[in-house]
Length: 369
Image 1 (cartoon, rainbow, N blue to C red):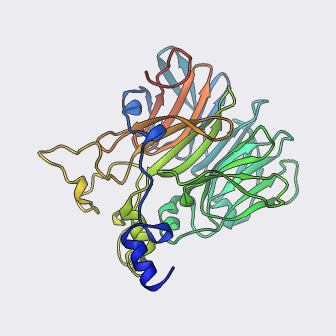
Image 2: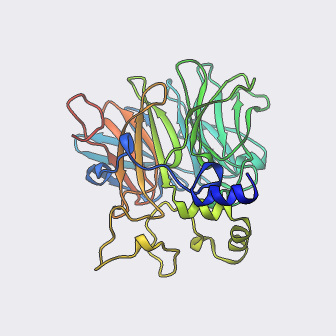
Image 3: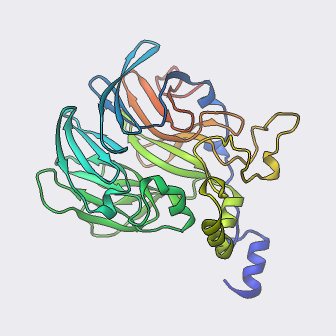
């Protein structure tokens, strides 16, 4: 679309020329379920969750914590501190763990008994998620081969699409690239049909990727209202999806205006860029939309905030069934991981540094009545 057609398309927000974002409606209708969820534990920078040892493991910065659930309480103990921040945690059925370390490769095994696996720097600097395959190999998301794990916002603003999905054999041998050119792959699970489901953050969608690397990538879920993060399977065959930040029309506009975006990157501190955040900004200098201006000291729940909390339960075909929200006036933002065990459904709010347990219903699932 070009010329008069492009201008008309922008005016009516039509097709690729528009800056509209999908409404949060239907299954995604906003609620306060994350705000009213049980707050089990405060853990600064909590990120990855995985089932382990009858409870959970959770990463926070460079430390791996074990979380024991005792009724309505959670007791956290430090399992191990590494020499670099933990970027992913994956658990195998036999109790093995795989830990991704920023720029330092992968550790496989158990606390105190690790085997190290190395990757090239361009891959090890932005490992975002991983899952064990039925044959014991490890499928890993490489968010970007240009920007590091910490520079995810820069990768978004640079329209990054250098992400990969690789398969690595812990027994040795080079990693095999099975998907390339992805816009920040950020979550991965094995589907019942043997393919992989991969969240692609900057394209707001979930892909189906064949394990043999033969191509044939399919879209399972598209045009999400927020940026998807990690995926985990549920015991009933469903899939849990964490979404770490909202899409906004202002963000979409900035991403389309190349001159403005490049000047913003070159001249403004990243903390002040117009774009998504994991938590509510407390800074005195920050980009602000009119709808986010406090009126009589109150922020409206429907304000176009830069951070948000969102967790979605899908069926085995990635059809959304339920959603849990923390709206603009809430604090449980920046949801990066979900894990379901016999003790409940747990979610990590990195934005608030909180481990949550989603409220149960009569059917035992994590849905508020």
